[in-house]
Image (tube, rainbow, N blue to C red; front, side, top):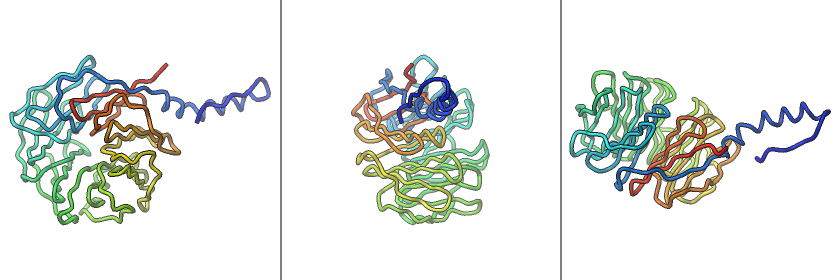
Length: 305
């Protein structure tokens, strides 16, 4: 993966070709993660970035919403008593957060407000296709959908299996994972065969034929358009979250501060500045990622000159 070097005149074109081909990988590797000052020591479970200067983090303790404002992280006023598990934003003025007791909060540009929920089951992940189409999933296979006006429960094919993560490529192509893998194809959710018996933590897609799932004991599986397959993992630690910037640049984080990266051909271990479990990762772009976890841990990756 390291850039090759060649010499002079007759190899000039070869040099140019090699430089162009290697540049994305070199950029993806030239990163350094560092700890960032956190306003809390509580457990942080989910991070999502709208832009370089606008990221949100939620956690499992009352009032657990903090925001990045380009300079520092600060605690934001929220409705009392919420223990939040996941956050996702459609835009800077439209964000959602869900909780372990079925509560749902929405950010409308000025403040976070409570929105009526159709469930008291734990909700562990929320994702929006647009402002009028959002999904949340959680314990005992709970699935609910936002239609622009209200949230409603949707039939689940998982039985009692819990769901820990949901992601949509489009309105007619969504995935949810946990104790099973299920897919939404426009009318209903259905089960899809899994190549592993391990519990699955997180799903993220680059396109309809390029998705990644991570889970317990370092499990990594990939969807290439027709089936899920096991992929060699560089770790046996449980992976809690995966996020892809593009087909050649994905990050996954997990227990004991584990960070791994996909560079287009394999997953490799990246030096971590923490031993605390990392629960979530979100990237604005290649070289600009945030991860959060236990004990209020917040870390950031930056490109090294």
